[in-house]
Length: 102
Length: 169
Image (cartoon, rainbow over all chains, first blue to last red; front, side, top):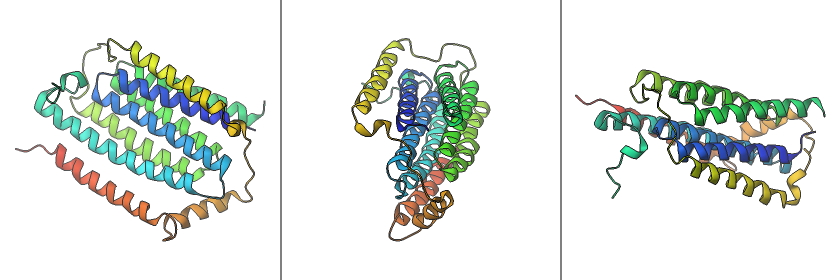
């Protein structure tokens, strides 16, 4: 059988890859892609802990569904913000959106 | 090695490889398409964890809605750069070191925990898990409030997204 450690190591690796994407990418849309990977890693952790440690309490799956909803909301608002920013400033490169950077 | 372990290792390798391509490919359309592969791998892992409903929701919501939204935005709007410059910051090694450190720290901290290598406990009836999830999500004694809040949040986010992206003449 698969031990819990495999899932946790996999989720840690996925989270780290997503973090790299968020920190290293220039384009704001690519940063949002990294955030999606991180949210997925968290979800894998939630479901794995639910299945291995408390299969009688459904909390892990319930919270995973909340994260689905929050991720969908985040992507919709984020992408529309980027489209709006592009219209005003003709760029979505994170370094060039510096109106509030002093 | 059992068949399940083999399936897990193959799926995990595919998922991590495509995740690495998501954060490194120069073309944003390719990155969004690799995200679909990565999300599909995670859906298979949900199925391995006896969370069949979540696997279906992952395919419908994440792949069918979120990833397709990314693909549409990248392809239909001028947000993505047309040239083939590197899409990664010049100081990419700093986040790289940080990510490797985070991964090492997480694994080290988890390995100290005694439940790290715990085996999967048997469940009497896997179908009962789905029934339990469905009834607890709408039960006043369990998760009906967060569930309803999540749906209100979704509606607010969709209206907000339309409002923000609206092109005012």
